[in-house]
Image (cartoon, rainbow, N blue to C red; front, side, top):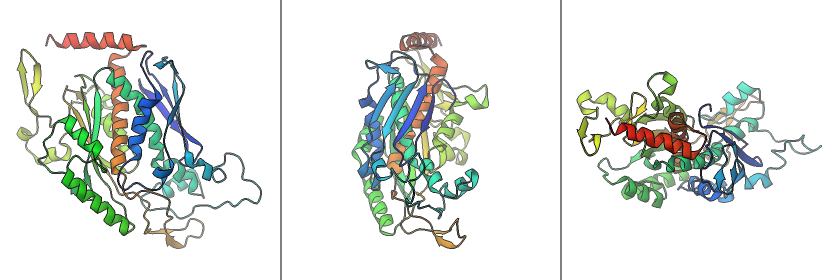
Length: 391
């Protein structure tokens, strides 16, 4: 991922560890492993998760780029060990298998998964070589990366929250009217990360029913960034528009099939007079809006309002009552392979959505206010805010 805040992840779902390397983090940012681990734990929770989450206790190790609790300005390396590696040492060994060792291959692709297309693209006849990296286990590393991004944004008053708005066709009440703080509190207290108690109960019932049938459920989550200044992103080139960058980031999350900002698709159903946020002004607070239908973005640029993104997650591809498929080796009709998986992972996906929001906003923030140290960035940031007071 190119930009001011750059990162790469590596590792397989059942490999020894997941790793991430981050470049572009300024010097002088306070950072501890504990801060990152909080979100790693949140990603593992949620009603409908599978057996893998009972095995893993994701904890990050910072291997470089931090000294005495402060970033150095050099690349930061993060590592999250896979506890399940102990059961997969032979299957996922880096070296050649031992003579006579069983070499069981996965040859029954799952509809809706990367299995078949990935095998054909890379020339693999063992789908294990595809599913290990295409697995959503990779998002563990992204959430760890975002722990650093969130710390950077928090230094400048930007916070990010998420909540689930729909699972399996069950939606939160349209008239739910609570503060952002209360919404976040309710979401974190809910097993499905839903701020509407009645909807949450119905979502849990829907997950239970799907589990009984050997099926899976998808849903929708919303991510909100508070405290973003005016001016992140740009309208001057297509790839600098922040709404486009956010959409790409959210749609890069495994199983995400749709993304909308602000009112999103609803804007297509309303006249302009019921969509655009009227501009107001007073001497004390300056420019402001009564509404935020735009989701905090106009022309690819933040306008000072909360940035609001929703993403639609499809049902997971591994079904305990599998769909029909074709064996890669024999070309015979078979049932798709059943890998260990979740019934519903929408609550966890919201935490991953927070991660992608934080990563994109950090990149845009450093692009706008960039410097080699937190102190330099703060000078740039404060000077910019002072300049806006004259508008």
